[in-house]
Length: 147
Ligand code: DQA
Image (cartoon, rainbow, N blue to C red; front, side, top):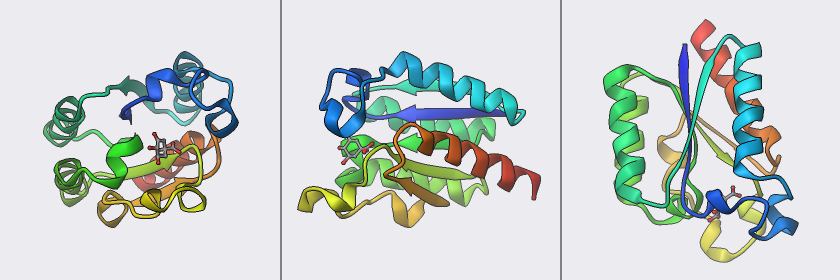
């Protein structure tokens, strides 16, 4: 089964951006990690990143049309994009798993990070576990697909 791992704005800057919060490893490393974790779970992982809200929303529509489960770190879109929230809702309403991931624990940070417009429409959320959170999310997808 194919799974898309979608990353929102500024995550292309992993390794450079606030390494104290997001670690020293870059997006390419995350891609390789996710592909490897996926393979071990029998999942074909396609990792994507965009700073463009319209593009990320388009990937949700594609996921629905192609019946593809989603792992998503919506990054800052988490906190204000009702457009992405509505698009993510279409994914879970279609019966597909959508696992929200955050590298950091947003609740332990700024006030504006305490609320997610994605969590209410996601299947589940993983926070504060670094890149390993994507492994937990992929494991959750495999579990849900096997049910
Ligand atoms: C993030 C947390 C968000 O608040 C932030 O805007 C990000 C990354 C995380 O992975 O911890 O860009 O989603």
